[in-house]
Amino acid sequence: MDGNRRWARRRHLPAIAGHRAGVDTIRRTLRAARERGVEYLTLYSFSTENWTRDEEEVGALMSLLEETIRRETKTLVEDGVRLMVIGRLHELSDRLQKAIAGAIMATAGGKRGVMTLAFNYGGRAEIIDAVKKLVRDRVAEDAVDEHAIATRLYAPEHPDPDLLIRTGGELRVSNFLLWEVAYAEMWATEVLWPDFSVNDLDQALNSYAHRERRFGR
Image (tube, rainbow, N blue to C red):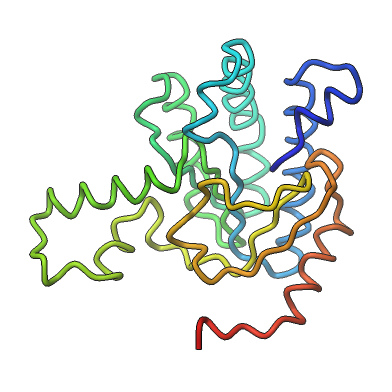
């Protein structure tokens, strides 16, 4: 979800104002995606590298996540959407971990789609953690294959993404779902995330619908 800070900077606002505007985009994108039959939506919210940002901005992001989760849980339940959060959650504050756990439990019965937040997430970190699980499980060398690794990722029940959308003109994967996006289609736009509209989503989905997927064959 790239472009929150640039959106704020262009309006002479603090960075957190851009992140707050980005939350509104999440809300409308989630609903529009669900209406269009998208069952899984994964949003890259905070990377393992984002800790190097200004301390004030990082603190504000943590507070915004907790505030948003507590405020939006009821709506997710009403809409039948199940919330998941992936990443190194044990590194977050106890308060934030409790808020996340409570929202996940409250929405567990959702049957109309899954929204996953990648928070304190990194694709390389996810693969490293999967390998550590292999070691802990004492998996024999000959038994290490794609299935053995995939079942030890943060969300093994998720299907691999079909479409990776990049906003803000970015043209890189940026350490996002490195294992899972091996054959995902990519679509990029110059639109900053707070300005990402339902029409932009439709353009991405339309582009995807007209591609031939060969999966390396």
